[in-house]
Image (cartoon, rainbow, N blue to C red; front, side, top):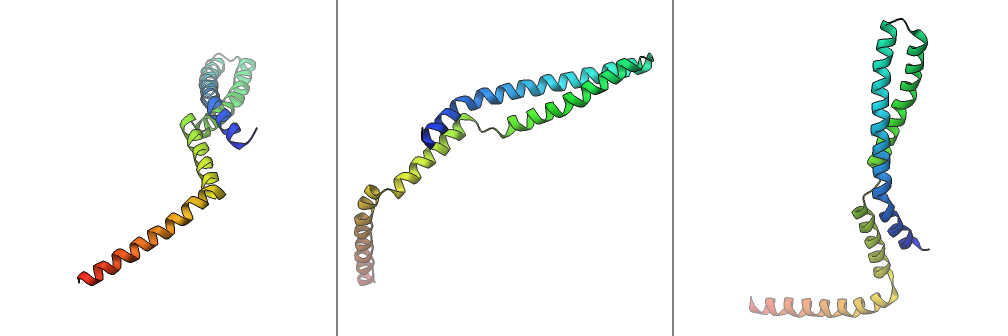
Length: 125
């Protein structure tokens, strides 16, 4: 597979991965909130073992939720990946010899037309 094939594949899975990571971030955030509530209740009722367990869960859930949320935010969307692929195709087309063979003569024709038009405009003044 070449670079473009990988980009098309990435475009197909980018939405799914972003959605999964967002879901995991929400679940981890909810788990962190619930563990904080359980910690508060356990401390108030003097259940120190339960409070310690809830704090451990919070310490694991909160960073996991933040990490999943950040990664989900930085995964490009399908449209962005497709634009990257189009840019890659455009770059390859510009650098190809066949396109250069068409563009070079047309640039010479354009320069000739500009010179001719400029000369005619100077004569009219």
